[in-house]
Length: 213
Image (cartoon, rainbow, N blue to C red; front, top):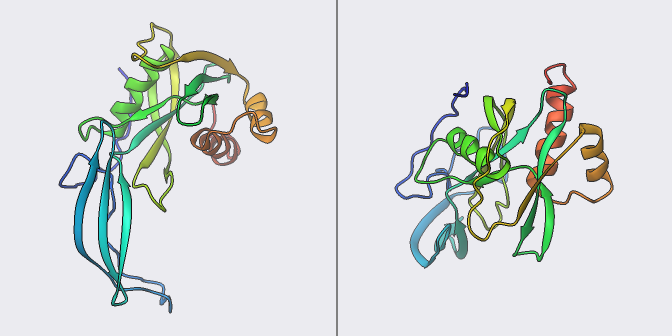
């Protein structure tokens, strides 16, 4: 069993529970603050992991149409072994036609807590089970078109076990030192955005401030 501090849950009327939040008032006296009203919305595509919504919005009284990819969100895991090495995966991505070096991650199922998704994806993709999962950083992966919110966790107290790759996944597990991972980011060998973010965030704000493994 892993120890964790759950993140605040979001509410939403659909399985895309981590989609667009309500518009907030501007509290910084921003002279460019806008008034936004959704006038209509329709689902134009519904896939296995995401949907596409066509949303008609009035911004400062003018009509606009946005095609939005609605996504339930994802959990990302930065697994750190007791000796400080990072567990990564070589993952073939059909969308870009190449194998990427990544941290484990996966789509949130049925509005489950992100931390439960993180524990599951870590075990399925790498075989490691985490004794402790700690919230690390949260980000929107591509907010111009996509509602996906990624919640990253630091996984420690790892114990090895069997993997459970899904059909169609092409994954190889590897480990490397933090220094080598930073060099791989600097040299362009790691190009996956969530991996770059979590590794750099850990190095700068956790390890750099004395909170690392």
